Every structure is written in C-alpha cells, then in structure tokens.
Image (cartoon, rainbow, N blue to C red; front, side, top):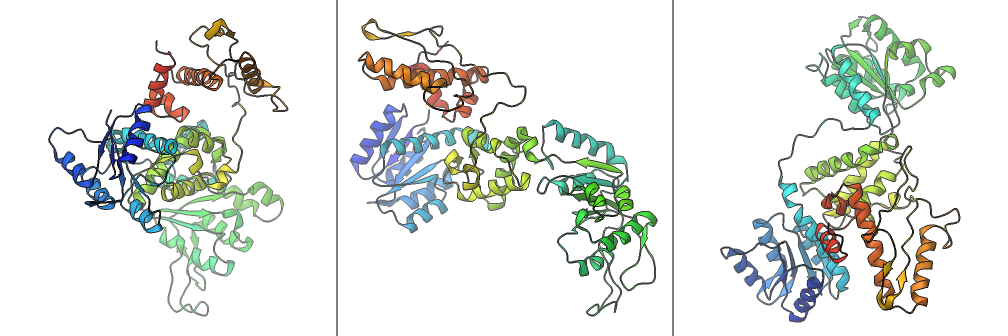
Length: 508
C-alpha cells in the first residue's frame, strides 16, 4: 500500500497524524517542508505517495505552490490541504488548485483520519479513472421497460411511420425522438425540435409553418417555418397535448395531405417530413374533454411508445448517475466524481418527480458542490436528504437473513466463563411501533443490558465487533465473497474491510 505523505513544519502535528494513521493501519512518511517532498519525488526508486497531506504556510515553502507542482507530476494524487489560517482565500485557492479537501486547524483527529481514508479510497480508484473511456451511449437502460423501448426503436428503424411518445416530464422523450431519427433512413436529414407549449399561441403558427413577407406587422421578409427547416428529416413536436385547438386543424392537414401554407401565403408547400410527437398528458382524456381533436389523435397515435418514469426503472439509477457525473465533469473540465454506496442507495430510493432530468441536475450540482472526489451520503442535496429512505423490500424479494457468525451462530464465550447469547437476526421491519421492545433494536438493548448486568468490561467494543462481523458477512454473502464490492456497498474502504476481516477472525 502506498504511504501517506505528511508535510508540516510542526513536529507535533506530524507526530499526532503518524500515530493516528498507524492505528488505522495506514503507512506514513513525514516531511518538514515542501523542498523535502520534491526531493523525495525526484529520488530514483522512491515510492510515490497514495495521499499527500500538506500544511499551507511553512518556512522554506508554500503548500499551495507544492500542490500545484505535485498536481503537474501526479494529477490523480489526492492532496489534502491543512492550515491554521482558515480564511476564504486559502480554501478557494486550495480547491482551485485541485485539492481533494481542506482541513482547518485545530482539527478533530478521528475526522482527519476518516478524511484521509476517503482520500486513500480515491487514490486506489486511480487506475479505474485512468482507464480508456468508451464513447457514452446515447441512451442508458437495463430495466425491462427501457429494453422494450430500445426494441421498439430497432423495429421502427426502417419505418417512416408517425410515432407518439408518452411519458412524464423529464423522462427523456426527446432522447427517444432523436434516437428514432438517428436510426432511420432520414438520419442524413435535419432533426428539428419545437416545444409547442413554450411558444405563445400567436407566434406558434408562424414558427411551425413560416410566413410570407408582409403577412403581418413586422414580417419584413419571407421566413421558413419548422416544417420547411426539417425537410427530408424529422420534426419533433414536444408537448403536443398543449397545442392550441385551431392549430391542431392545420397540423392535421399537413399529416393528411403532406402540404401546408405559410402564414399569409397562397401557394401550397410540400412537406417531406416525418413527424414524431410527445406529450406528458393523457390525450384520450384531452379528447374526451374537447381540448384535443380526436382525428388528430388517431393520426398521431399510429405507434405509441410509453417511456417509463425513473421510479419504475430504479435499476438504471446507478448507471445513469455515473454517466451524468462523468458528463458534468467533462463539461466543467474536472475529474469525474465517484459516489459511495450509501449515497447511491439513497438516490435509488428517491422518487425523482423530475425523472431523468432531475437526476442529471443533481449530478451537475454534486460535481460543483460535493467537497471531495467521493460523494458521500451527507453530500447529497437537501431535497434528496429530506425524503426518508425506502425500507420496504422490492416486490418478490426474498426475506433478508443475517448470516451466522463464525462460531456457528451460537453465543460467544467471554472472559470469566460467562456465555453471551447471540445477536438476533435483523428483520426488515423493527416492529410496528419502532420502539426498543421490538425487532433487532430490542434484542440489542436486551443483550447490552445482560452484559452490563454481568459486570463485563468493554461492552461497547464487544457488541460493535459482533455487529461489524454480521454486517461484513452479510455484504460478502451478497457479493459472493467479492471484498471490494462488499466494501463499496457498506460504504467503507477496501483496506478497512480487509483489516476488519482479519481482526474479527472472519478469514476462511
């Protein structure tokens, strides 16, 4: 394992961090000033650091200048900047220079160790971050409903038929329309999109069909509308359910006859355009209410594609999140952030009323606002954290059972010959009242009371160790023994799970 390099002119700071990191089984190497660090980097055969922890103001060198130099040589190296001068300029300069995070003195040692461990985890992902990136797909989705959409796009690739896409706002209807165009024989022609709900009624007719010179006040030149702009390609009419009723008649004529008239014009214009429409509304209900023409509905509803909301395809949230984090990083010119298992689990339980568009916005927010390269649960935006996590099991899921301990699930024999009963299995529901008398919390309380009554020392450590053993065994059972994946799901580092497996005697 690569060592943690500590740079500080204060020997007491170096000593405290060395001892704290040693207890966490993290190797260290200390330096008194930036010159020593640069010399060590220049030395042939010197081990490169896994993380660099550097003070800012030191005799014989500046930590921010060291940050800039190190980032030029080792751009993927996580650097934690610490300083006793907790001012805005220092914080901004550190992050602008590419620092992993900022640590203000005096700091809480356990929190500092936790931050360094997060940086170690990020450093270990360097190889993955540097791996060649494949071209991002135009659409993502492993959910069965999305696979049905992909199959439909494939079947429609050789057809010119009109398609109606339905789905909630933000679910990606325009992406589907673009995919239909891209994989059709019209792919060489233009793709023109217009949101019929976003344009005032008085302007929409001219936007769609164009106008002749002098057709109305301000029409000083002939203007080609969207139908003419999409000649030989595809016209995407988004939010078609909000189109004014009188314009629906003109649209029906185009779909029926293949021609239209510009506003103020008297000569028919041929329209060689494939129309794809989309709406978040129930068009059948709009027809029943008299707000949408029934004949236009049937003309548009030749092939209907329903795009599922994100809450119906939760298995896609992880891949979409990583895709959008990488996309935001490219747009901002920064390294893409990773997301921890607990944070991802909370996103997967969020209802996403704004669907995929909301997830994309959240990922952009995290790229800008999350304080480190690994997005933790506490880094998620307030609207996500305000929603309680889902606790119900998915439909058809088998009940979760806690695996047996290494001793076969029986009680552990403690000092003085006193046998402690095993921890209860962890049910999904702690009980209808959620109080201490129900579920595993009640079992834990009873266990603690019995050990305390027996006068045993270190009750805290005993119970914590046994609970950790259960958690790790459950994670390893879920991942079929894959430790790295188990650590990610638990939200801990790879080295942490390895060390705890050894400490808890869980080795095979």
